[in-house]
Length: 114
Image (cartoon, rainbow, N blue to C red):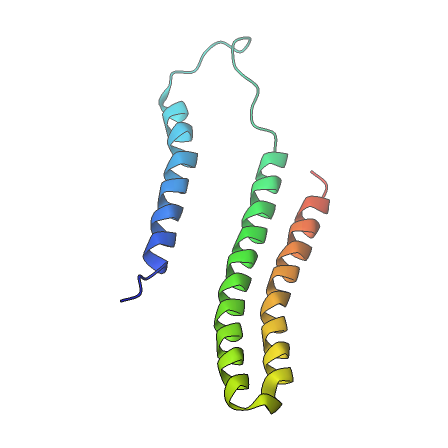
């Protein structure tokens, strides 16, 4: 029986979100301090970096999954019929293009002025 990876991805995402937002929730419950004692707020650029990282990571995970499925099917198909080898390579390259799109989106996000 092959273990399913989707539940592990969901668990890891949930734990990551808890680790990111738990300190923010704890900080929101604290009493406000005097203006001269308040720490500096988070710069808006941190959200830009976070969104670029999420875009790139999601594209890389999607590309890895697509290449694994298309590559396995392409190798199996080309073992039976060698004439479809080029088609299998093209389909696998389309899966790799997803990662390139993720890089482009991340660069576009980082290029936006704050």
